[in-house]
Length: 110
Length: 119
Image 1 (tube, helix red, strand yellow):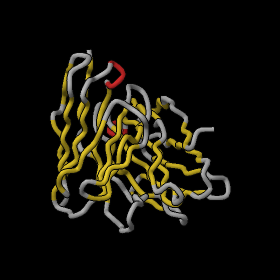
Image 2: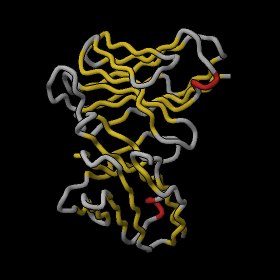
Image 3: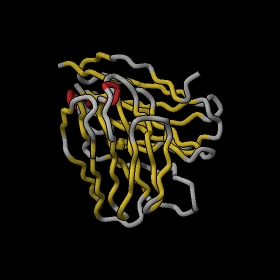
């Protein structure tokens, strides 16, 4: 089993749609959780950290489920500019490293 | 504010040639530094990390080496490139939390990357 697994997609949605991505992780000692966004041929950029209580930033909501070992990202009212690859990133306390998922590709269509 | 630079942005090299990629960070002291590689259509693979000057940890056996001659400078090198070294090389930094050998699971911030093609 991979340490971090994401559905690669692509997710093709119309503008204004709500889309959700899940990411599962295998290491129960994981202690930090992030979503990064990567545009085509660019570097990954932090979208948001994910906290145990869940957190929201505008149209983006991230949630953590430790019992089932997954995190999620919900995007409401999708914009064309949301088209990108979304990377799930998990930090492990016993390795001290971040593990990156392979990413989920989102394509928002007009 | 902190910024991270990488150069060159793009590089095309023949098999067997040497390589030197440079990364510098501004606006922070004693950062943790990282080199990643992203092959086409794949996830990020951690190659090296450093918690201080001259301190390099290698994650995977490979044809590459890294050095940290100054606090905010990180260099990725190879003596002889292979076709399989092609990819998108990313440098990243994170805040140093202390401890002799541990790297942190804090947020990492990436440079713009170097796209390397080995022919």
